[in-house]
Image (cartoon, rainbow, N blue to C red; front, side, top):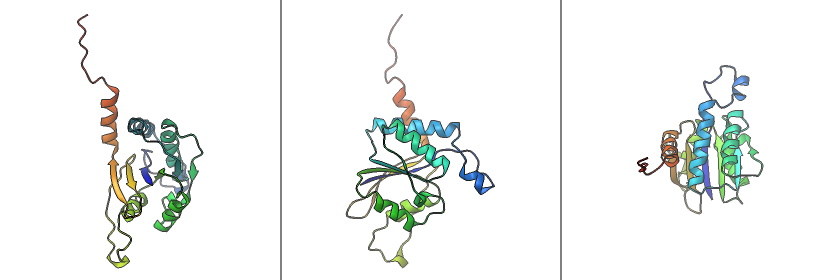
Length: 182
């Protein structure tokens, strides 16, 4: 399975009241990040069999924008296993539910999405006392591609918003200078 883990895009400043923070939407920059990421994923010919999102508004909006722009037409699944207070066991249950899909996009939050990614990269035979979870920084709008197979998971790519923005900028401008003398 190809698993894409995406931290929700920019949603402005965090709200002090947790009830209001749950409903915090993407800001203008976040929407632009989603569209640029979708453009890059389309250029890489990435399409998703399943999209799963945290139930929080900013993650759901990120999932909807990226999914729509990459041609995903099915319903986006919302899972509390990707919410900010989810545990790795919750995340593993979400993974088991997506077992039949080949390419899956999961949209969630920091810091647990980073912890889930790090935990996936630890070989399963490692004793729990010796496990040291790798620290992987995922800024808002960062996407990671992980290959899940029979052996240990393998991190294949990690694209931060700055890299996506650069790829987007070079792919939407002309590669050759205009040569007309008119």
